[in-house]
Length: 131
Image 1 (cartoon, one colour):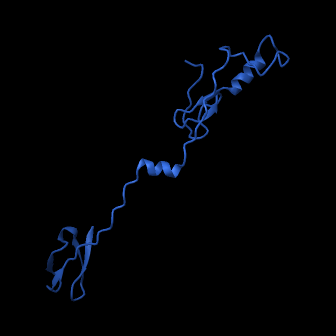
Image 2 (image 1 turned 135 degrees about the vertical axis):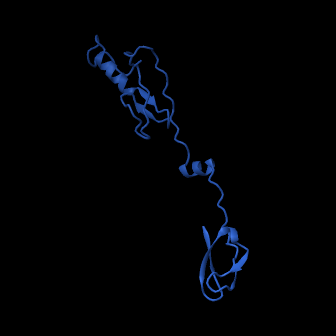
């Protein structure tokens, strides 16, 4: 940066910041020129994490899903044998998969188990049942 100075005879000069508070001679007319100190602008306080969190608002809390009553994937207390094929358990398997969720490791939102990316932040969701 440089400081703009006007000599008494009207010449406009640009001098280095290091010359602030000093005086010198105009290179055009040799008149004495005083270089003023530049006005200091007040520094803004740095933005803190609390400031950012205040702008974002309260955190979005996701209630944890209660553990299943039975370890069996086919167990579904909301369905009885009258829905679908009771021997194969296909309808029970499908409905229990639809109710399972994954938790996003980045933002914590619950997403259906069939999603591979978080619908809120786009982060990759953990794979379920794959090694």
